[in-house]
Length: 231
Ligand SMILES: [Zn+2]
Picture 1: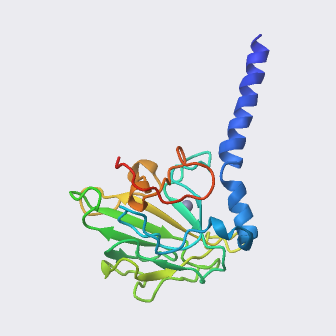
Picture 2: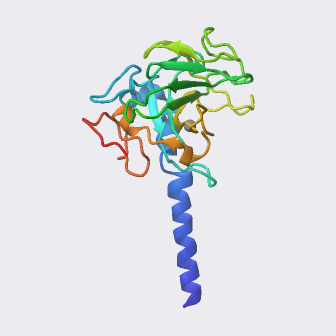
Picture 3: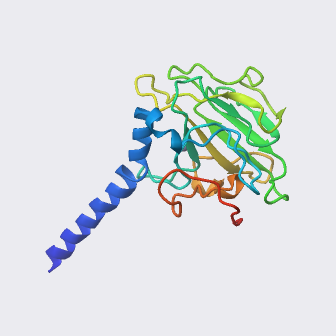
């Protein structure tokens, strides 16, 4: 009896790993990267603003990975990944909302947008972290308005920030060309928190007016909802 329970347990573990870690959204992402022209109907255009949503879609492409997606056994995805389906440096990235851009010294591919008043909860400041804006060799694809060390440069919604890239830190193993975006909490003293920790980030769904949460999103490309509740 015990042996059967152990075997059943192992089988369900294998299925769980297969669905969440190996499967899930990986299949469509790989299919899109391999042949974007065959999947043009999966693309969300840059600049799209869903009804009642404060943010615009900052860059065009297939929104392949969602908030809380599991593709590492150690943690959940803290944002969304938009795959342009083009080469590095070809798909523009625009500011999703009005705010102030900072690029820390040493940031090759990343920017962070400070939004002093969260449009959904005006008593707090939030941040929008965007990365992978460099080519595989680490050459920045960020607009010259934002050199390394730039601090609090004002931008308007829709202003160009840079381009999607494939930088991973290892030139031999670049990632698929995409933009990663996460919405990051403020620590209460005017600084952003560590965006790699899920608890420090916010579900982007209500900001974009789409269901971008892996736990509840339907399969297939994400589309505008008419309206979504605020957490
Ligand atoms: Zn990502």
